[in-house]
Image 1: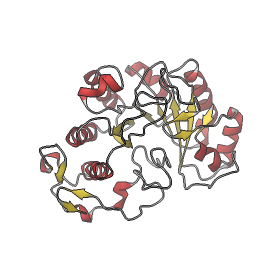
Image 2: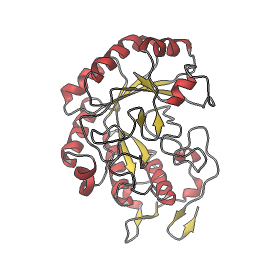
Image 3: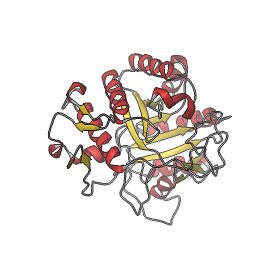
Length: 304
């Protein structure tokens, strides 16, 4: 199995590099997915290294090393499993869960499931939360970039949220040809279903179909982060938003200068950090994980 490089350094399994302020450690099971998402390093047509997911390197370790590292650590607040849809990944993940579920650490699993029955199998393993990625929030590009049917996917999320209330997470990737309005409407829909949402910024990975696709504009990403924050914290209703003709957010109905800087932290399951998952350490972060540096962005014709 694999750990993200930052997780391995956090647990002391790798000695080089800075020890980042992480609250969650991230493990990956399987490689070379059966599916073919255009943006994913693990897609079946991808030529990216098998050790990559997004821009992060995931070195291999013996399962026992990782279990011992988790048991020694008193700083881990959550364990997150990234389960690739590939041969034997599920069995390996189940084995790992059987060895760590008694550590009294909340566990999240990000995996592709297609039914309530499949989801139930994971919850029976003692996990706290199940992550079912949406990634592409525009119905116009969902099939092209991710594959499958957008409405069927949303219907499954709705059923899962009803069956497992407040235990479902989904992911949205900003920068896959969706409009800001489409993203905001999706965030609002998930919030009303009681589904937590993790925001990602599209990251072009060499060897994937979208390796030359541009990253999202930082101003646009910041506007979406604020939208998620004010909606999930019930500070405004969607009806109070205003959008431009280009479907960009131009008003939230409140003074966004007064909102908490935590709006710009990594979102998703509790204690999710994902350090440098989408960003170059030498540039401004899309998602801050260890406190927010001063950030400004434009809303309409104003800088905030």
